[in-house]
Every structure is written in structure tokens, then in C-alpha cells.
Length: 168
Image (cartoon, rainbow, N blue to C red; front, side, top):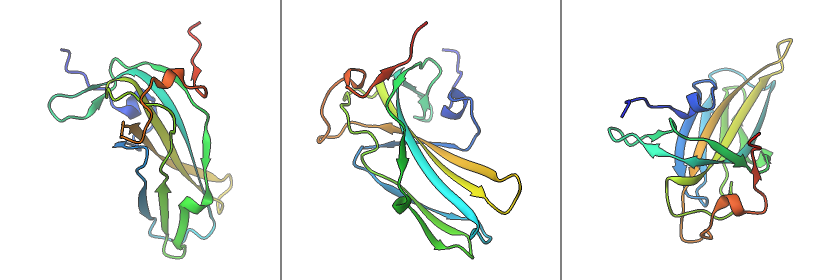
């Protein structure tokens, strides 16, 4: 074993602001953002897109997902997360609540936690409209969708909404 561990942010070759979570499709989570300043002139938006990777392993030392040998096989359609999931609690103080919705992916899942794994990438973005040009930043979650009893057992790559990545 090489001892090399590839994180999801490295896997996507993106910024370090990616948090990996394992959730059931029925799980919904709310996060409170405290910007610490007035965000009255900020625009907030969120979207999500499930992808399918061929395989995933886990680091034996800490149990974290390891994407060193993973390959993206394909994806499902991108979807906007509605404004009802972004609540301005107190704009003057910079308090915003963001809810990652349940049922991000509604297709079949394999009970196997390591093969044809569906990962929903959720992005929460905020744009500062006070500066020119506008500045947009984001946080991303990589949600590993886990099998639960209400989910249809099946291969997600055989679902009608799945689009394979062309191999050539």
C-alpha cells in the first residue's frame, strides 16, 4: 500500500472548502452561517448534482473515504436548490441558514458501500453585490449517498436519468 490518501477536494481538483458527509437519501441537514457582518446586499444560491464513481475505499487508520483509485463514471442532471432552503435569519448580523435537502438523489442504490457509489455534490454560493466586479465564493459538500430500507436496490448506472461520461 502506498499510503497515499486522496481527499474529495483533491479528487475534484478544487478548493479545500469541500466537506465530505455520508447520508441516507432521506437525511436533511441545516447549517447556520455566521458571516459576522451585514450581508443585506449578498445574493445566495445553491445547487446539486449527483455523480457516480466506480469504486471507493476507506483509509484503515481513520475511516475517511479514499478516492485514490476512483473514477467518475457519469452523472445525473444538475438541480437548483430552492430559495426555501436558504433562510436569512438576521442579514444585518450576517446570519444565514442553509438546508441541504433530503431526496437529493432518488434513484436506485447498491447496498455495497464501495461499488458504483453515488455522490451528490452540493454547492452553496454567496455573491457580494457591493463590489465591482461582484465576488462569488462557495462551499461544497460531497454527500456519499448510502442505502436505506426505503431505497430501491439497484445499480445507479442503469437508471434512466444517468448519463455516462464518454470514454473517447
